[in-house]
Image 1 (cartoon, rainbow, N blue to C red):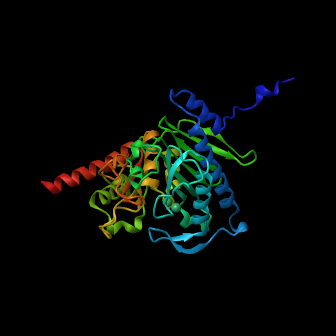
Image 2: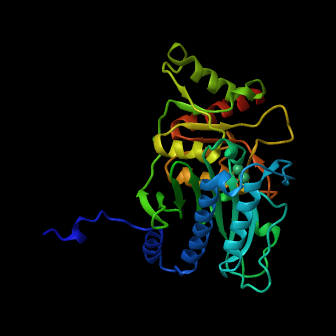
Image 3: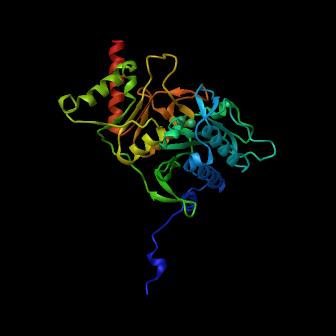
Length: 347
Ligand code: MN
Ligand code: MN
């Protein structure tokens, strides 16, 4: 007779994984684990709503706009509310910021305030939701300077100060991608037991890739270094690269980044000459920073083309940035093209 315990596959839950990681840190408190647990609880609820979709009447527009002037989907508002409700009561959070509200969100006075700031995009890729495409929740965690009511300045920290970043992907399976500054790990939600299980240990982005992702319809508005890079990719084995490239475009940041984490590639959302006053499309604090932390922790590079994303000193909560990220050698090539263009311009 076989011993059943010996034949069970090793299953490490997210909670176990985080607690075991925390034990290695000398000054770890259990607070962070509890905070992460609350984020994860919110994401399980969001996963359930996204999955049930039209059955529970959550698809479609909400007839309102957010701070960026984007039409809100019903699910943008529902997921924002789920995140706020899951985080405000626990006593671990000093304040929150969301893509969906103009100003930082205060913790109601009857709850204790903790030492972390959580910034989130409650539903990334939400314009895809009615097409049943992959969407996600992105979050960034900062330590708050002191235990007082945080000011806007407390939120505007450079991305390299993040203590944790992650995103949850609501795709064919629900997955959590997480870093606490010690590599990147992936967890898959086991819907039957309601737990995230460690399925992708120490994710690494291949340094080389022959796959790019960019919105080609904006081509005529690109800056010269981006145009040069993409022209060379498109020229394939008849051009200077001497190799053929492939293209992907999902228009959902979380889905693009997950593909790059899985098999490499480069994603570009550059600044566009159409709107000189708008530096790119994606938001620094709750998109580029957490994604940048994850990409770097997986061995990739995340840049504006001219500057490391994680070194940007934010000026506004909803600040936009150009974004170029992915396989190290490809992103570094784009950075080199910017340097060459900028120095030839000066000379
Ligand atoms: Mn987004
Ligand atoms: Mn969003």
